[in-house]
Image (cartoon, rainbow, N blue to C red; front, side, top):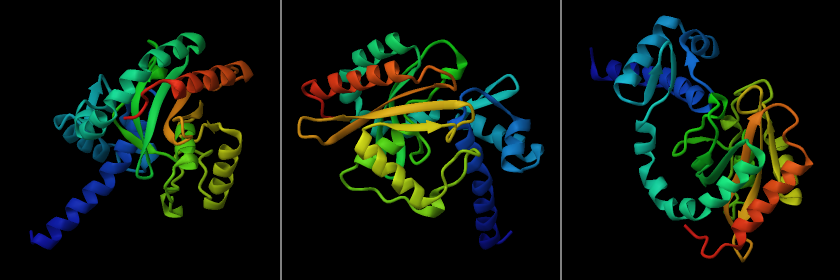
Length: 251
């Protein structure tokens, strides 16, 4: 095998590996080989072979016949996690109070490039509330990500080629995304209804410092239903306001 052909094979493997990791990062519960093969249009044998390697590397964890992202994801994101540790620790009590009020997954997130970085999360025992702090996911299809993109001082640009449809509801039109982000800035709240994961709804609001600069996004996520009502929205806004008034709030 020549060096050039070896490079091509490596690229081919990576192109098959990344979609699997992206699905597992966004999954709300462990995913089986059959579902992964269907979503990626790859043979089940190929999916199983790649997963076996990823499990060996601790990038993926096996639970019976199903898979989730593995413990090495958190270690790979350690520099970012360390950077925001003080922020996470200072806001944790507010996150716990918010979870006790609404009983839906609570997330604290920041922007890493055009990706959403989960700094911390609070959730219950239900597997549907599983989330992985310390990993990055696409920002454009999550409520917290939309808040971060809308309020980012640097006005992070998302390319249209990056708008990949994760579900049938995922927004893939750049102009429509800009319209949504304008609305988020005006209303101070963002929604994602099945755009990141089918059957899941998330809402998020910004946490600002005393000068009105974005610090992080505070989000709620849960299965579709009536939980994301006016009372929940107001509870989320009050929690973010309380976090914004906390001193110090910087990372």
